[in-house]
Image (cartoon, rainbow, N blue to C red; front, top):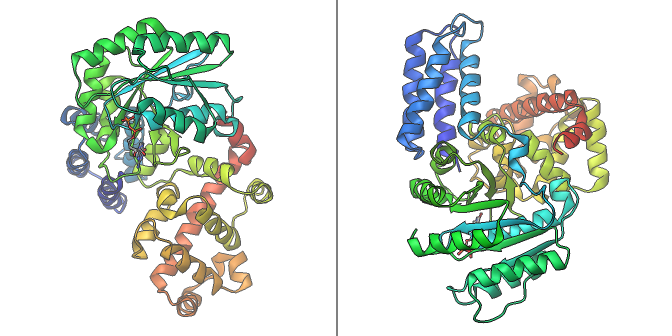
Length: 452
Ligand code: GDP
């Protein structure tokens, strides 16, 4: 996801940053390239046009061109515009609105095959697991209103068992509105905090589907109506979302299959076209593969600046307690040497492999490209580990000691090249800078507190 867009933009910005001074013509040329990159990523034309206009105006105005680091400033302007395009950073906007007298009702809508049922179970799991939200665990009930697709209700029941979330008992022959009414009753009587209603999908947007959704919404009065769309369908996903948002009062969108090789256009145009925030991203078939959608983190990934916050969050979920404490202590001191990098790399394997993490680490994408490793393969981890293994104890503790001669020795010792050693050093340096930033933010604990 976003890989080719990220590469294209990276190329444009490397050229911009590579020069000391910039003229208006340089910026205009770069922005033409940005526009092409966005269109190739399948961003809707009016959205791409407006984006480029805004950024160009800001970049050639003010004192950007006369500043000491004009290229850097243009990248910052693009970053900020991307964050706005993705819906801005609204800390309240990401999580669901469940602040009502229980049960809070979340209604899921979308086309068949979009990933609606899976996403219903993923959100239920997230809400009922406090370590995933940092909030208290909610008691969740799920109900399937899909009476069209055979076994849809059973599918949700099976998922419920897997995520240990209750599902409404199935009564054969009941219609969606009746099921919704029964589900609301059951949730009230049995003291559930949240009721999730999985509605029926269709192959295409049709009026009968819309009418059914409206009838269900009338009965259930949901606080959240989330539309699930498949990001692999690109522009179609945006059209579907527009259609739905004209007919039902959506409160947000969930983009599924963000782990696939979608070009990213759906994610980038969704907010501008529908006016609805993207709340979550599905990043795999497993039931814990759902991420809260944070505009600034996604923008950071697209611009290759890494997404340290998501990385730390994921780390906190999967690393052992002692490791976490040791890491927190090191971070508190702003320390990060090759030994730390090595143990991080080892942890990465446990956290779902490189493919899942590469985009989150500053500098990792480029390092991966340089090592000619297939994304997601662990070949790169092996190389990195071998290089660190070929360093002396001193070098590991103080990587700044590594000069040209030492680089040649390390490359020979690990069966790699000096270029790869350089990439490793660069990566270490960028991560070390990121860790210092985390320290400034009050360390890992402060950061976790901030994440709510
Ligand atoms: P529904 O018809 O909309 O309810 O779709 P389902 O929930 O049954 O999902 C259809 C298929 O998509 C299933 O095989 C899911 O495992 C898969 N799926 C759902 N979300 C994701 C995702 O985020 N990533 C990937 N790779 N697969 C997904």
